[in-house]
Amino acid sequence: MLRSIARAGSVVGLSALLVLTVALASASAPATSSAGLHGFAQPWASNNTGGVAVVFESPFPEVTLIQNANTSVAADLQIDGILELAAGASAHPRVVAVALPLSISHFNGTPPGSRPAPWAFNLTATLEVYPTDLPLWNGTPAQPPTPLGPPFGQATLRVGYTAAAKTDGTGEVAVGWTVTGWPWTSSGDILALESHFTMAPAANLWTCSGSSPLTQVSCPGHEVSVASGGTVLWNSGLVGIEEDNASGPTAAVQWSPTLSLGGPVNGTAQVTSGLDVSSPGSVELLLGGVAADATSVSGSMTLALSPQTPVVTIVPPLGPVTGSPIVYVVSAAAFAALAAAGIWWYRRRAAQAEEEL
Image (cartoon, rainbow, N blue to C red; front, side):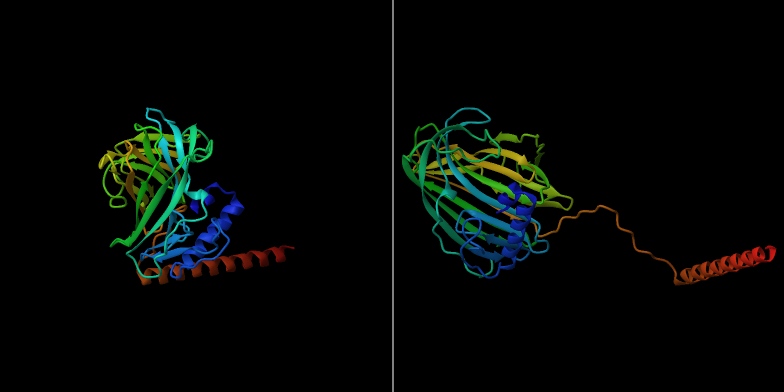
């Protein structure tokens, strides 16, 4: 949802933002109908964690968190694709196969209803796997590569969502994902999940090498400097990204540093994370690992949004006026006396001028 806002013009973007606000207003009453970004005019599922509303616009793997105190502040996490990458060191590795979750009509799942958090539900779909032979993130905007032929197999994507509220009112949604039955093209390749993280309004983006999101002034890491054409970062030691504004940490995505592998391997693989940052508030996120013909690959992420409202101070506010009431009375009387004297002097000078004439 927010991704569409970020890439839209001012009029279209404003309309999309109004739809986002309507979604928040419907947070206590999930509903389904037709028309909208994925064919739904109202949220397919929505709920509230206290300080933050949780909205699923449609039965697709995309979740939006919205501050209750300020509905213009929101964070969105959308799963864009499943990619098989050829092994090798490159800022734009070669993608040899792709499955596109947003290309189907919908995922199968039952919305959680209006019960309060914590609550959980799953979305599942069988996706076609297509061949491709294109470099990753070698275009603008960044997105999964285009298929270059008919599908050669299928894979199942299962995404589980669990929403909860922290004691400080922060809204969190844990996202667990599993890919099963991937038709490998090479046993040495990397299987990765590609997602898109959007924050509105955009703040300062940090990469995190430790700690849970939103638990301190800023996560241990480095602020991302975004180049004019975008910035691509690869790192096997990161565990999250965080948006910080004048009030402190606002939104974050955290992920597990390992993947769970099923099948012949039955083990784990270290996660290599990739970031394509087109702007501080728009990040394409890739989480993958060498899966070695595994029959299933599982990972996890957490999307979090603070309930606090960003502090934007353009003009410093005036401080409160304090003092003794007697001083105010004396000052007011003195000012009135001076004003009266000035009027008397003006009238006297006017009378003298008339006499001289």
